[in-house]
Length: 115
Image (tube, rainbow, N blue to C red):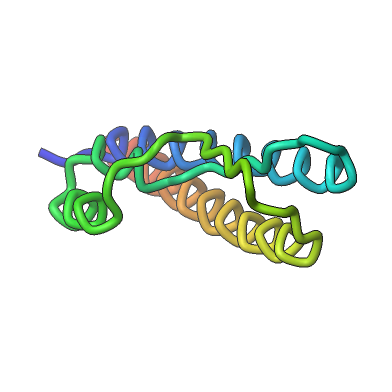
């Protein structure tokens, strides 16, 4: 049986990953001129396999396994690409917060109907 608490846990995990990615991107931008700095990024594909939805499992299989924080040693940091990644991350966060708000609203409705 699928519950709102399951959804809340998944959205919470995504929000944690999004915030980690935000820190990684910010660090990349801050260190754009630092010699020897290794670019970092977060790969959401690693965590899709932990979800129990058939769609999420298929996505995980398609994306393949990888580390959470990928370090790309020989990749030069492109500030424009980092800013694009920052915007993408912002949109993901906005979608995740809306989903969490919807879950909370659903739970409030169930509680109020049960009174």
